[in-house]
Length: 323
Length: 296
Image 1 (cartoon, chains in turn red, yellow):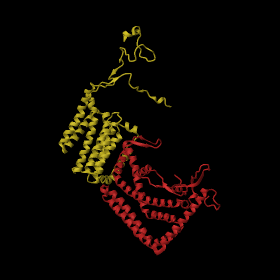
Image 2 (cartoon, one colour):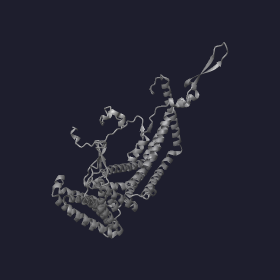
Image 3 (cartoon, chains in turn red, green):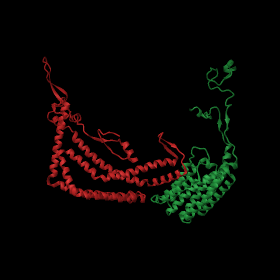
Image 4 (tube, chains in turn yellow, purple):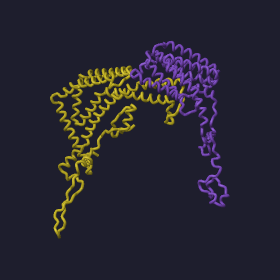
């Protein structure tokens, strides 16, 4: 195993141990560099000072966006009553969020100072903490996305069920298909009334859902890129690349022969030289397995989930159990 | 062919394929097409019987006309919603009593519905509609008037097409027709000035599209003479109402009713003479007996 003290038996194990060791060393060195840069000239304090205005600015942008949605967004005509209700609800949430940030503002500097200390454990650690901080700061966007998605999902579910009632059909749970059904008069009446109401309120809900989903996807993409960077730093086999650079005879892809002299009557003399691996195959063969994350859904199932309103958790970690 | 065959022409040609016969494959004898039958399923129609049956269509057309006329009056402001609500209530009560009188308790026992459950469902309707009428009022504020009119026309047409006139066709769907009528009424009701108007409009739509056909169907089955009288009175009422709005519309509507009532049955009977269906042993077999006894 990697962490055993005994010498590695095979060359592959040796390379892996060496790669991990060198990667760790480089990581910690970069982390120390980052830390020394952060703690010099009170940069932590400057960072903390700019954090509150940035959060305020983001909240103000969100408020402007909601005011735009409550008006006549992109020329689309929304149902005014529902628009006002949803807009006020979300504005109140932003107000709560701003109050929370202002409450936390005296403690930000101290928290950042202690968190910055963890950079000594490596650059990848600092990047992961940055990703988590981004997630915390955009928590309200996540909340809005969940509200919007749940409302939209409920509406789509209700609409599809009532559309079946409109045509006189019903979903047969036992046979998993659509069957015809004879409804009572009062069921028909209330069903059609609700169908009409939901249908006319659909554009408003759909627009709110679209806007908040786009924001959430933006945050998810940013987090994904940070994770990708961390993954890259972790899995790059630095030792192997340096070896290929300096002592290329240690990494052999094969041998090649060169003819030295060919005289009549004398035996043929050949020179054997080692054909080193190319850089691409070095990286590919000696890549370290990492705790990487990659997309859980294919494009088509992602689009289907977006259309129906199911909540999206796009990144899956290797080794995570699927439910 | 017979001259060529010579002595073998004394053999009779048999319409079988498992015997080798001296005739060519496409040979037919004089019994060809003996089993052809023409127009065996043609029905003989009586003119006045067909006119009587067409009254169902007349009734539905007049219902739609009356609904649109009443909506127009409410939109312009000539009809107060309280007046319509009171009139509708009184007429519904009269119709309910009439239904029970004609029915004489038979159908009610079959369906197992008591008067108390009828009262409960009507209370549910009224409460639900009254509660949702403010929502209904503001539902189509942002949609343009032309779209609303187009949608209502489309829905009312669909209501007329899918209505159950008594024919046994695959296109008939009473659920779909009723739902389309209610959809159209909600669209139109959302254009009225206040939420009380919307409430009264939707209740009136339910009365005229759901309860009135039920009463008429029962009346037609039990008492055809009074049914004809009621149809004529209803058509007259619709025409007079339409006349007060637009005389061109009234004339067109009269033409439509007359053509459906008299022209179409006449054409149907005349065209029966031109029918030319051929039947024979080449038709698809129809399974006429009940096969459920083979399924255990």
